[in-house]
Image 1 (spheres, rainbow, N blue to C red):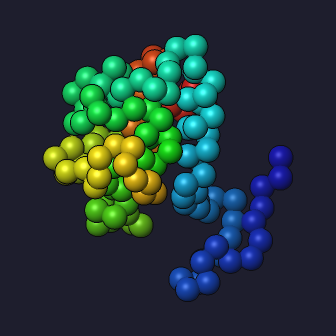
Image 2: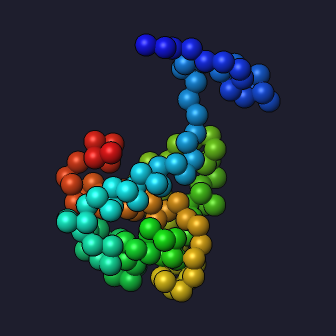
Length: 138
């Protein structure tokens, strides 16, 4: 197995790259989450309401899985509200606690606004439908 890194991981902090360096992968997982939802079409439908899978989710009766996939849910993007987004990992529960009492930015389906929150919710739906942790489904 090849186990080596080259160059710098962070020039500003003078951190060399190496096999143990961890990188933030940003929004890359959104694509994987979307594919998983499409693969689960025998068990769910993108027109289903979030409340079908997460009954206590705020506004879950008004937001569909399609809204989450297409950034049209109106959910605020937690990244804009998580003060430690670049330094402290957020758990799903942290994110839900943060956004649960926030009003929607707009009526679901009325507009499009890039939001990471929807994909966190989709990951929870995937876990609920499969009965497995997201990582195992992936």
